[in-house]
Length: 284
Ligand code: G3H
Ligand code: ZN
Image (cartoon, rainbow, N blue to C red; front, side, top):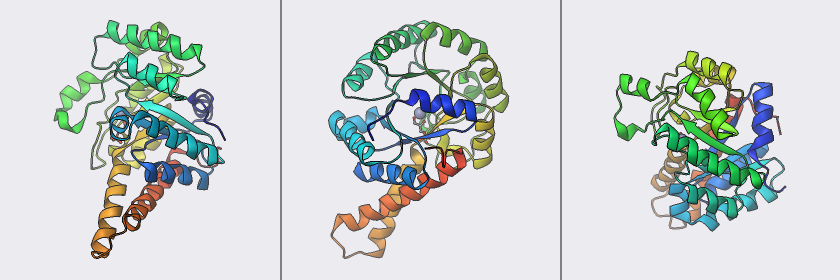
């Protein structure tokens, strides 16, 4: 089926208290693995492309691979821009047929974040495309952040309410304790904060950096109002390890498909597990 937008899918997730996985895809095998996993679990799915993936594959390849996968799929697929850091990147993705956008102005002052988010929302809505905005900052492991620094970067619930009103965004990425690119699952979320944001903001909330969040943390976050969960590092890990194990097991093999296929299989298993954890299995 053709791509769908994230609007109605996330609205339903909000009403029915589950979350939709937003999985980062960096190559064809990952795109196929994510969509096949979603089909096997009968789940809607968001495939997201970061600016890094766009730089790696090129915007057209990145977009068209997902469109082809969606066209062949029996479940709803969204093509989402992940962490678009400027206005132009969002416009380019809108033109390339993305069905969901993100502007990440979290490193900018509040007023600038509002102004750019608002501008993107206006043009995207004119085309019927929803926009995720971010308030508070989800740091990366490379920032070597301390606990008190992490605390200071978290989303303020009252500010979130004002931000949503001023920008008109469709979903909100919140900083609630997770950290991007964690290799272990030790992040401790501030569940109370999620609930306080939820009380003030009626939109679907988005959890970034979810590779580092343990399963119980994910379940609790979903129960408190998280509707979209971003996973990248865990899939990169699965793909790389799948390929590496195959290379070790077949040192004389020269056909790359033998290795890439194992990477794909590992990603597929990881995505199926997440879909079940998020509660979206059977919701397609
Ligand atoms: O936007 C993408 C995500 O927030 C992924 O974070 O690499 O820690 O899973 P992760
Ligand atoms: Zn993120």
